[in-house]
Length: 419
Ligand SMILES: Cc1cc2nc3c(=O)[nH]c(=O)nc-3n(C[C@H](O)[C@H](O)[C@H](O)COP(=O)(O)OP(=O)(O)OC[C@H]3O[C@@H](n4cnc5c(N)ncnc54)[C@H](O)[C@@H]3O)c2cc1C
Image 1 (cartoon, rainbow, N blue to C red):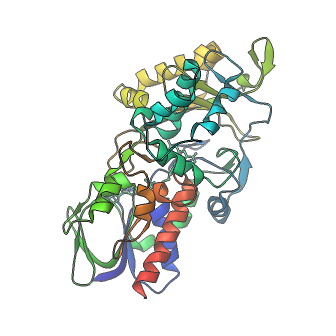
Image 2 (image 1 turned 135 degrees about the horizontal axis):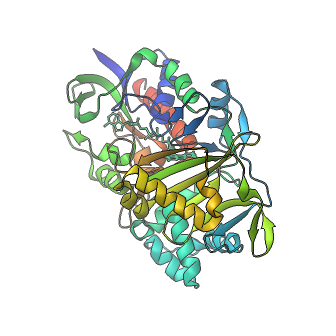
Image 3 (image 1 turned 45 degrees about the horizontal axis):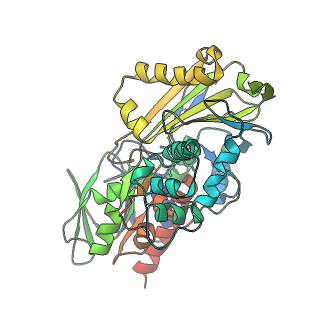
């Protein structure tokens, strides 16, 4: 049987593409490498609580995600962080927020020539400690050592974040698994799990898609997978150099996420330089790439989440779970004191070096890669369409970007099929 469209990947992008196709008179299948849908969105649910192992936060300008949360039967709740809450570093310096404002000016004056992100700090930030802090923040946010990253690509990506609000102001009232199940319901009998696509060839009418054990035919293909995962597929008839180079320009991130639940939110009356403050975030200058945030929802449990990104995550992924947790808790105690050891629950997720999800929040463009790789890949090649959060023209690297990108690719596939 030949399908009109094969979608590769059942993350938010692939499932959103499926929802669009489901509304039209077209035949399609979704082929997913892993045994579950959702990709980098996955809630671990227990009887009394749940944890988001991957994507968690949204804001109200992220309209697609906001609607999906409500369509899945949930509400949007505020993250419990007040205006006056402060961001400090592990040295307890209250001025960190003003230091971080340097980031806004960082990309101004970036000329035609691309430079490594770390070089941009050297050029534009005079204070070595401020450089260190921004570098650490970027290692966490991008999940990659800034030494490896293209400044131009990051500047372009940031322009596509279409909101003046923080990306963490809101969360769903329940597990995001509900959003995944809601999206999955539109394609229920059309998803094939546990079948990594290894090869794509061209046929007379379209494409032959091969997994290790099966072969599928379609007129059109949507690759709703990270660009790094797409670059690991063998294209038997080759791809134009421009597309191949764009795919190869991306590098996977690396992230470890740990959430703790506490009886009391002791970080909300915290002494910083003899004044009592409410803590919003701690950015560690050392080791690089670590951030701890108050991730509690208003009226809900008291939670702190540590995000460990880049080289630090790669190194820690090699240790045992117990070693990682002890290391993470000892970092918490450096700032918050021994109280941080007395949590009532915790959950950890390691997203490092996964061939299908990628290793971090998303993949980024390498220095000396093609800085506008996302833009190149947004254009279909014949009836082959690349999709996924990294490539989105709006809110790239976020769940919102994944949904928008999947919908966009499906509409484009329909246009190409019927023209
Ligand atoms: C720890 C963590 C925290 C995050 N926090 C946030 C947050 O708070 N807010 C936010 O907006 N975003 C967050 N993100 C990012 C967000 O989760 C992603 O941007 C988004 O979910 C990506 O969706 P996607 O569909 O593009 O890709 P993915 O979720 O990666 O889905 C791709 C799917 O394709 C499959 N696949 C890959 N290769 C193949 C193949 N060869 N054959 C078949 N199937 C294949 C994969 O198994 C996967 O299921 C976070 C991510 C992580 C890891």
